[in-house]
Amino acid sequence: MQEIQGKTRTIRELLSGAKYGIDYYQREYKWQSKQIAELVNDLTGRFREDYDPSHPRKEVIQYGYYFLGSIIISQRDTLRMVVDGQQRLTSLTLLLVYLNNLQKGRDDLSKIEDLIFAESFGEKSFNLNVLERNDCMESLFNGQPFDPIGKAESVANLIGRYQDVEEYFPDELKDKALPYFIDWLKDKVHIVEITAYSDEDAYTIFETMNDRGLSLSATDMLKGYLLANIDDVGKRGEADKCIKQWLLKFGEHGKETETDFFKTWLRSQYAVKIRERKKDATPEDFDLIGTEYHRWVRNHEELLELSNGATCYQWVTRDLDFYARVYLKLLKASHSNVSGLESVRYNADHGFTQQYQLLLAPLQPGDDETTIETKLKLVADYIDCWLNRRLWNFKSVTYSTVQYTVFQLTKELRGLSVEDLRTSLVTRLQSEAVDLTFSTQPYLNTWNAKSLHRQLARMIDWVETQSGEPGQYSKYVVRSGQYAYEIEHIWANHYERHTDEFDSSAGFSEYRNRIGGLLLLPKKVNASLGDKDYRYKVEQYVKENLLAKSLHPTCYQNNPGFKQMIQRTGVEFQSHPTFKKADLEQRFGLYQSIADQLWSIKRLQNESFE
Image 1 (tube, rainbow, N blue to C red):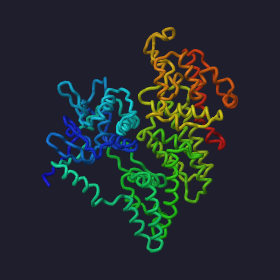
Image 2: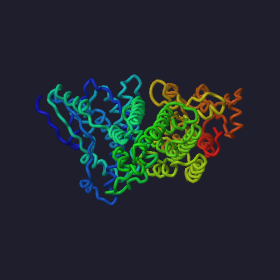
Image 3: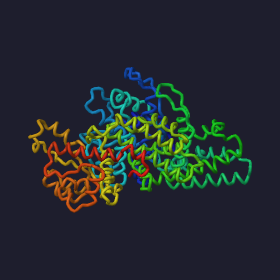
Image 4: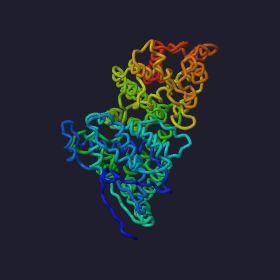
């Protein structure tokens, strides 16, 4: 084995002027929303421990460091191939691209373009240089749309994860704090770069780090602690079998699932404190469970009543068994329609991973199946109403923004009976609904495209199911691929067609993006309509979903289910032979009425409400 070098590098040192390739055997970029959320939350959370708005920018040099792991490089002459670490490097590059776009036009920008690409003789090449991804990266860098159809898996994933970065980056760091954060990211975030000078050596290092002598996981250590305290050999065997059974089932959902379960379960039932958001604040229950839950359990055995073998046995075979079963049921409901738990899917589609903590909070091992189902439905429906009211009013639902609120609510809901739970959630939503109304018209922008798409999908699904048609939310919510749906502007982007109502193109553009002028259509249909005028478009809308059809007069003929829905719900539909400013406002009133019913407090008050 030749010389191997390991060096701790800042992000600036690692990426500035560098060129990295990706080896064929690990070609695809596979990170999902969860990993992006963790990366963004970890980085921004560590930065905010030191950040103070009163600091001058130069104070960032005194801020603490953050270690982002290691990468393994095989040096081939002038070519540097990433043997291990491409998922992290790619995601970091997406974050840098997003930050670069976010700071455009600012006077206090922090230069980061050279960490994303290098330019030589007028040619731009990305520092993480993978040929089939470059067109997509170019579009993201320039803030332009990119069609991933027919492209490699990694390309579609790049677009999805960039959108996740947009969604999870906290609003409070987008203003004054932004250049501070970028400065900190460049010079205070470290990665260990391990460089070998032959592929054989690089792969040996990779195998050694990933396949041999792996450290015990937190779950392994928790399992060992629990079993060691159970003296009865027979019961110890039963407990061991119970844990292994659930770990095997967790493994079917991905290697991180067991860790996520233990964090969620313990936080939902036992955490009583959370770290304050200030410099040098002490990590509390919530935070310690997130980093070392096995040690937290051992240090709180009195709180958990794990004082002897009998209680450890019960905690495994009753408590762990109960919450693991429910947790896996919720994971299933998060990506498929489970009767009574539809809201779990809706919440998951909004990327709200904290829902599981809230859903488990009121449950107790003695609850029967009816009680479990009722509690889960109440909490899931509350979250659905709360999230959509916030999103409608341009309130962030990112992890960092609502973490403290969710934690406080978790404690309030813990162990409540069905009726107490209903009372608590209704009271809370009634209070929140005072400010989070549907009276303000949302508009499409860069930051809410995903959430607005989901809300339109829900509205279509509600109108169609209320009219006696099959629910097709799962179809409408798809945003990429051959069968994607896209947000359609009823007004084509032609200001000159609307000069009778608008004095400027800017005023027209702002109005055009309001929700009253938006629909969802299949991607191919949307593309085919192009810049056609409304009279042409409305003849095509009549062939699409019921919300689009309702613009056309024929929708109100020979359609008994639709007419009955209008009469029963009181939602005021009407056709629009033309579509002027007043028509757009009427459509907003329609959407507002649907939203009022779809995310109504009545869903929590009345079990039979649909």
